[in-house]
Length: 397
Image 1 (cartoon, rainbow, N blue to C red):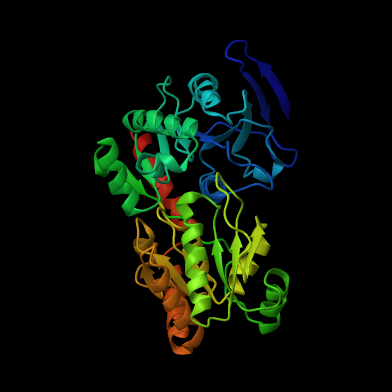
Image 2: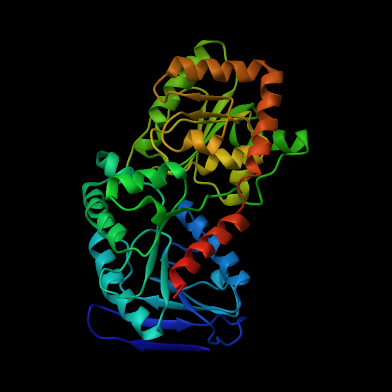
């Protein structure tokens, strides 16, 4: 079933899709609209993965309800999650701050009314300021409130202007850590009991390697055949790549032998790339990324600011020790399972823990066991269930 309807005004065009392998859509008890703007085939990043993992479980678990995924580009059949879900494309594509307002305030507002939505869930945190439909945003962190200098000015100004408004109009707010829950309540002056925590979780690809040969094959691919520490994340100022490189230099000066593999795309920053022993892999697809983490000697993850810190739980689930920053949400996520929690600017201290991890097999094994146990606290099934509990609270008469 395919159809399209053009709406004149505010550059709005709607195209409704039911993927070829989906059955006709039927009306059920509640109509739940879902912001699917970041479900981009082959380009899922942090919030995109959160969206994908939660939406597919949410829709599958509740066939008694009807869902509509709202895209700003042509939907892919990859995101056809069930017979009780439809897909709609709204224009204009919302990829710049001035287009965010056009898309959410006009295109989304009209579609929510047209579809008679009962609630709108937005996993990127952005909302319509013109609808009367109850809305639930997910605020992943408030980095932009604390450090606007780490973002392009136009983006920072938009987030700092709009997100306080979104917090005020939200029926409930979701976030990914208790740290962020308290931060949101403090920054935006909203009641803390109106904010629910829905954790991130590791994907199924993250599990311990069982073959030394597989580990060596991955070392050959990413680190010239050498054992290595790994960092995963965008090369963004808040990720503290410069501090990581300084710590790695200090570790090598102490006689450390491992290499360092840095996985991630450059994002508003230009980091030094000529340091001996450092390998910049760029962005890796999910299976290759998981293989790179699993084959590493440890994750060194020392950002200045995180609302959660997904690489930490991915490393835990992979049986990989973690040296983590002691800032923001990272101690909460580690839950006592890290090798060490460190000051992000303490290069010597970080290097010392890297050297200890290299040479102390008992320390390593204890960290692996603690991490595997801690990883059990995070699952996408649990996260989707918590998300549904929040939706139910809004749907209650």
